[in-house]
Image (spheres, rainbow, N blue to C red):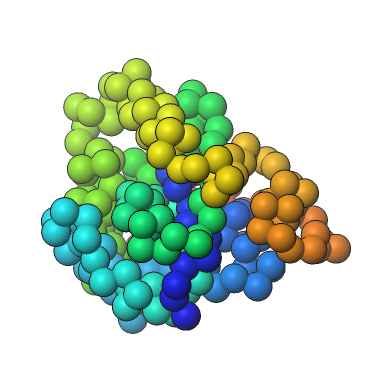
Length: 216
């Protein structure tokens, strides 16, 4: 289904799952980290290989069943994907650094260090990829992840880099909690008659993670 038409440059925990649902409601087949859990046949290894290969991957094959991609691991490669797919539009999902850090510490960090993580083969493969591709293993590095100012600065720096890198006409910056209007205008789509989706709250994230961990 590639080439990608939409590239999500925002870090996880910035409304990327809600954006995934919104894009799917608009007709896009959308890649998101959760796809690896939902479809065990979807292999996370090519993302790790691409990262170790100077961020160069066989993107048409990696995204063969998708025409949009958001969340990690996609956002790690947003520059390479922009170059590969020059007609794709880029969406940067953002929130305050303080609320993002709090969300990460309440969701991703606890499951990254959970022993049950390594007992599920699918999650083990996902974890192996994440520990390489996502901020050089930040979420399992206790010294770095507990340095709040350092981690928030990583978040700020990434968002500023995206704003500098992506031409304005290709970029939409979406605040957490935004609705349909600007997104649909940006993508030249009709606004749906349904509310903008709201997904993957801290509570939902933890429940889904625990469920996945106990599935062998």
